[in-house]
Image 1: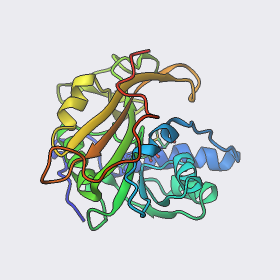
Image 2 (image 1 turned 90 degrees about the horizontal axis):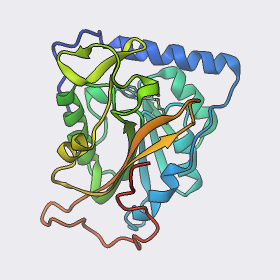
Image 3 (image 1 turned 180 degrees about the vertical axis):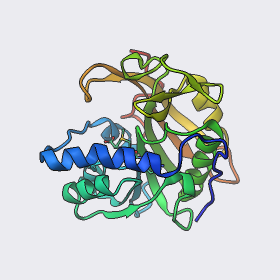
Length: 250
Ligand SMILES: C[S@@+](CC[C@H](N)C(=O)[O-])C[C@H]1O[C@@H](n2cnc3c(N)ncnc32)[C@H](O)[C@@H]1O
């Protein structure tokens, strides 16, 4: 277990986030609906090091669409989420996955250097900056050298989903209360701060999706973890041609 520093000033008790997400997913469970995913992740999988092992961690897996996609692409997947209700949905969508309740604020419950791929799809933007930074250090420690991180994050221009509204939390103008929870909105500079050594950022692009109804603006990020003794990603990777490098802003 790697300890991630809590923010002692947090105005929210630690169960609030879980209760909020349990209640959202409970509604989905009761409705019998299946949430729809997107194929964004498929475009980055060629950057996963070809080491034989294909172990993936889906952080904040929700109802499991990315977990399903990774299983279908031959990964052995561990899916974690703070919400027990989300994990119920994930088990239905991806019964072959190892599904585990975990709160990323408490540190990832793994030994380190144990995944070739870590995915976080719209799940790491709920935290104060110091905690966000600590979570990124923690997840880097769980990747093998040369391993890939692929994630999506709220954009600071995501006006339809709360960007630019509400009071900044503890003076942080990118952390706002939206629908009762703290939500972080990222600028390009945030990623340059988060992806210093040992990361090599492969791609960073601001994109849009209509997955949730109205247009949502988000950042899509792909980065590899460099070998400790070199500035370059460790093992050779299988052709980098398929990915979109530093895609332009929509
Ligand atoms: C917007 S949903 C995205 C879910 C999924 N990745 C997807 O794209 O469909 C955010 C997810 O992050 C999870 N989450 C929020 N805070 C978390 C935490 N501290 N630890 C683990 N999971 C968390 C929520 O329960 C929720 O499933």
